[in-house]
Image (tube, rainbow, N blue to C red; front, side, top):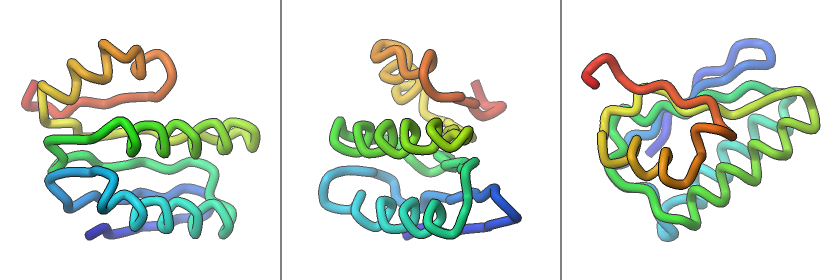
Length: 106
């Protein structure tokens, strides 16, 4: 499940799922598509509840990030609370592509 807050050309999607993977990332994809179609070019993904993400979902986020970059926009991931996710993002060098913001817990 996802909640969306949109203001002008900026939006935030709070991901309420514990895991983001092949079987549920289509809902996130639909939300991203709707926001971009409605003119949003800066999108925050709130990972406060996320403990796991698979490579398919990471690829999908990167694809939308590249699409937004062409429109002078971006996707950034905020409130990362899982040290495991931070390590994965660092190993994959996603911190060099996406703006990542960890939670104050780490």
